[in-house]
Every structure is written in C-alpha cells, then in structure tokens.
Image (cartoon, rainbow, N blue to C red):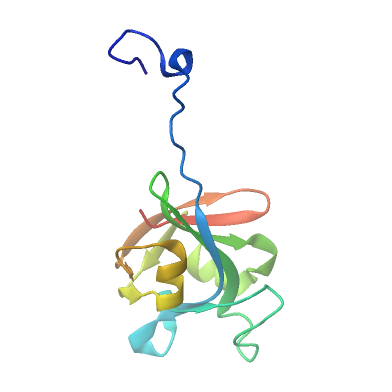
Length: 141
C-alpha cells in the first residue's frame, strides 16, 4: 500500500494494524433449540473454563468442546477439536462440507462480551467448514 507521498507503508515506518482474534472456550450442544436439541444446528452454547469440564456428560454425542473466535478481519468462527467430535455427530452435521443452522440462536451474554460482538445472533443458514488435521472450523461470517 502506498501513501500519498508515493512511499510504501513499510518505508515510512507506518505499520498496518492487524487485529488479533478474541476467543472463548465453550461446550457446543448441537441441534435445534425449539426441537429440544434434535436436528441440525446449534442448540446451546455453554461457556467453560477448560475442555476438562463436560457441561452435558449425560449426552456425550450431542455436544463438543470448541473455541469461538472473533476479529474484524475473520469474523465469527467456531473451531472444534476433531478428536472430540464423535462419529454420529460428524455424520449428522459435518460430512457435507457445510454446516447448516436451521434456527437462529442467540449467544450467551458472556460469549458476546468476551468476543466484543455487536450482534449476539448466529442466523439460520449454510456456513462453510474448513478442515485441518486437528480442527474443524465453521465460519459464521
């Protein structure tokens, strides 16, 4: 990028601002809120201090620990650790290469505050998935 003097930003000593993402760990319960957490989407988001805490240990295959992150550059994302996604959950929600949210969900106030979000909602829709060796990331923006 050039300044109005024709010099690059690096030549003037001006550095572009790169915003680092804000993050929060959460247990994500999958399903549709109005269908008692059955179906496709996100039913609940439960903030947690560490992955050692299982918020809903009586339903081991309907939830997974994840990390919500947000920056102006990347938008809202949810990264799930692959080893915590059971086969049933994988087949029901992620095998198509996209993640579907059937019903809009409102994120908990703690998540909204921690990430600095102005909009607390994840709208219904189809969202892209990025896969790596260790993580599956859903891009909500």
